[in-house]
Length: 306
Image (cartoon, rainbow, N blue to C red; front, side):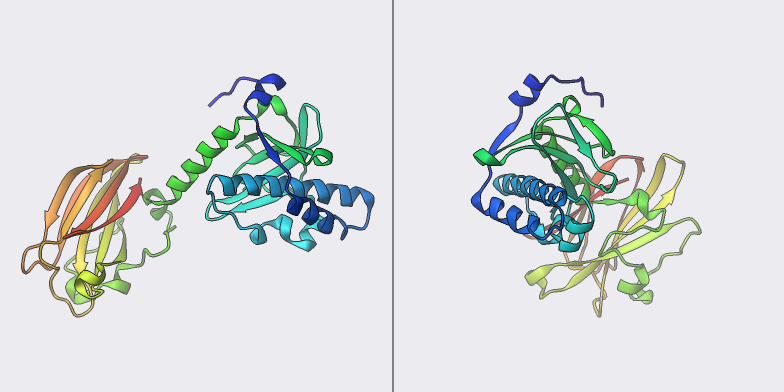
């Protein structure tokens, strides 16, 4: 996406003014006092204020953070590198770069390229004021022009996209042997005698235990997803549900659904003596869908992206 250059007037109109708290000032002074040179003390002081201001804003937006997991809260990192990051829980590290004034912000070489973005914060400690000028998703070192920044609203939209991306199972990565937590080899969760499935040479098969909760005294079923690549842009998908443990049959009336957005596109329901359920369909690269297991009032959903 291409963004047109903005004037400083545009930046100011879309910026977010915030107060610098007394706690932030005290923390910045404490961290800065550990540095050995005046230059390093100033660097640590302003970096810490920038991180504190962004942290306060994230708390206002109900976005969880973990200061202690940030490089900027590590005393060794502060002393030996130019660090100003804030860890956003589950999303990654957001770089928080301070400026006093001017039309650009310097991004040091120490900033890793795996940051989820850079926020530029204008700091005025004398008046205990700060301004979130904007952010950039692209992480590169050197001079960053303020006119290149996107708005703070764009930052919030970026974080929302990251959060929704993380809650989907990426099936394309399975073809590279990269699996999300909880998805195990089928042999680990389903007894071999219950599987009447032949493994194809180019299949990728993974399973996950799904707890059906108190309705069935903690009974679990195995949700198994099998990928068979057809072309570079298309895969064949098989979604199955099997009983686990000592159970021979699936719970009666358990429903297996495949949804596009919130619309059910196919469905299967277990009878009184079903050993498994199967739904098969094709999907294109980038396509999103959900698989839902429903039993009475219980509904459990897994989201996928190809």
